[in-house]
Image 1 (spheres, rainbow, N blue to C red):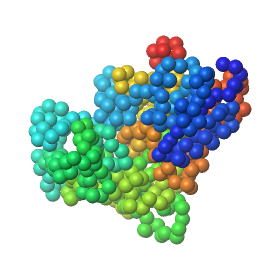
Image 2: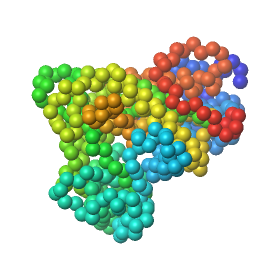
Image 3: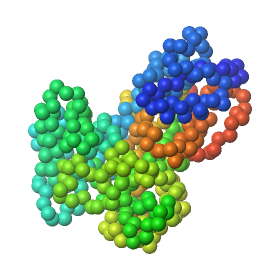
Image 4: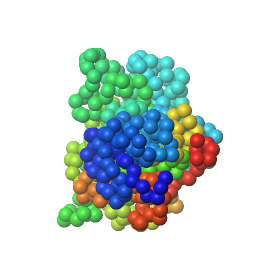
Length: 447
């Protein structure tokens, strides 16, 4: 390739205009011609960038021209983005690597493959045997030490998620899904309890069950923005971390160190009997799309929380402990370590994750931090929950849109420019992409 010759870029995110504009802006300093349709690129074009959704990209072009075409999505990555594939890959990896950090960062997980609710009886003596030894047959008013969370394997934005603490509770959940399917037979979608957590019929085959983490780190997001609220009115809210990571080639993994904290809009409370099987879980599900208040009050940078009071799940009293810069640095280190290991785990399932040297992809990673002040040397523990392709970045909100601009500029600098530009790069990197994994898959050049 001649020195910094012009290349052609197909940019298309039909349902995500913000993403499309961020990509175009990130490419604006390069010698590139943009196209809205892949078919408009000249047939004799030598150098092509496909920065688009998975469905819009030509995967044949990616495979056929590895030296001339760079694409923003891997062709096969089910073991990363589908919950049941992800946890099966992790399970297989931990069987061989029991000392991996994933042993403490992944909650105990079971895969449930079920078509009809009456199949659950057989699963208790087969795939769910270990879970059956933990769960009581029925729920009761007595304190139960463990709760579990059910998630459809291929759903997002909190759809179809339920809590339970007994075998009867899980059976009732599957019965409600099946009854709802019968009522809406012939329809493409099914509304569960009409609260917006819709479940598609096709998703009722694969689920994962995870042990519910009962000691989340709780913070009141209002504290660091002022507003005249007295300290005695602060209440701990649950939140999860949304980290963005970029997988590059075959294979490097980079963590974008500006991590978001996405809060519930209501005060946290310990799971109770009436929550079993219910879809009304706003205190427990921190997905931005599910919050009653969608304002930017519920979205913070992790860095902005330094100095915040820490609450424990056992008490909503104001605690004397505060989140320090050292705590944030520790959490980011744990996130980076978990990301590196989870990609290593998925590489051991080559049927469902296949790397290519001429690809890169942005993933949204959801993590939860638990807090146990009784453990003095390690009160925080980061747990990886899931990875998402084509993350809904618009939910970040206008106030923090600048971090998205920085993210896409970093992707352009790290993944795009080295592929097409052979002369020294003039554009400075902000250095906010942290390398988590650098390994070589297959042979030289990764082919």
